Length: 134
Length: 111
Image (cartoon, rainbow over the protein chains, first blue to last red):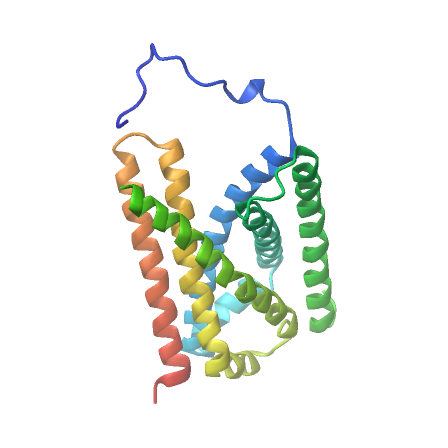
C-alpha cells in the first residue's frame, strides 16, 4: 500500500460531491481542533516553563497574554478544547456501540457545536468577571 | 502490525478518558486564577497538587495529540515527507513532555 496511487487508478469521490452533514462537519472540526489543541499544549508547556523561571522571564509572556492577540488566542484555545472535549465524549459514546442512528448522530453533532459555544462563553465570561472586567 | 494498531487505538481512548477530568480542571483553574498577580499565580502553580496535574495535562495531552497528528499525517501525506513529519511529531511531543517535567521539578521540588 506504500507510495502514491497511480494516476490511472480511479480516485474516491472527492469533496465537492458530498452533501453537507453536521456529522461530517463535526468530524473535520474534531481534527482541526485536535491539531489546534496540540499547539495549545505546546503553549501551555511554554507558559509553565516561563512561570518556573520567575517574574523577569515571565514578564513579556504576561504582556502577550493580557494583549488583544493573547485574548484571541486564549479564547480560541478555550473553544477548541471545549469542542474537542464534547465531541470526544460523543465519539467515546460511539465507541460503546451506541448513538449511530442518523437522527441521533445529527442531533448530538448539533448539540456539540451549541454546547462548545455555550461552554466557551461561560468560561470566558466567568474568567473576565473574575479578572474584574475586560 | 495488527496488534500495534489495536493498542494505539486503545491508548488513544485511554488517554482521552484521562484527559476529560484534567481538561475540566484546567478550564475551572483558568477562571479561578484569571485575575492573579504573578506572585499569586506562581505560588498556586508551585504547589504539587497543582503542578503535578498540570504536567499530567501537558504530558498526556501531548501523547494523545501526537497519536492524532500521526493519524492526520498518514491520511494526507503519502510521500517520504510522511516519515519526516511523524518523526517531528515525536520530537515535538517528547520536547513538550520534557519541558513540563522539568518545570514541575523547578516549581515544586527544587531546593
